[in-house]
Amino acid sequence: MTEILLGAALLVLATVMTGLARVLRGPGIADRVMAAQLLGTGGIAVLLLLDAATGTPGLADAALTLALLAAFATVALVRGAPDDGGDPPA
Image (tube, rainbow, N blue to C red; front, side):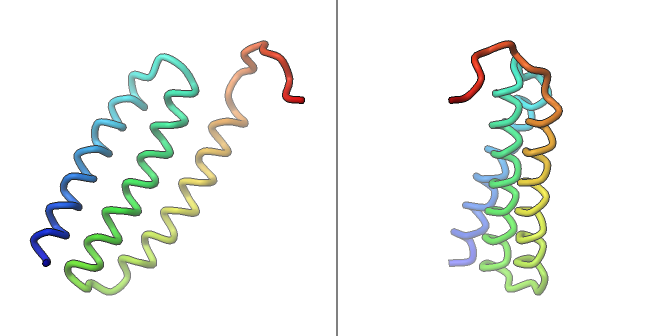
């Protein structure tokens, strides 16, 4: 079972790495925000899979901290984005 969890962690990590490329090369702010969310969610998933596979203490706490940081980073990115001139929300 440990090998399956570690393989799943590697697969999620590969997905996160492709998301990092989108953050760096994203054509628009929406692409970058979604990729940043992918980085946060994928990082959390990797930490939790590693915690389940190895039982290393502290990984679940690190995942919780990363979840909070990802949420704050997304809010900061959206608030700092220039206005695109679209219609305001209703």
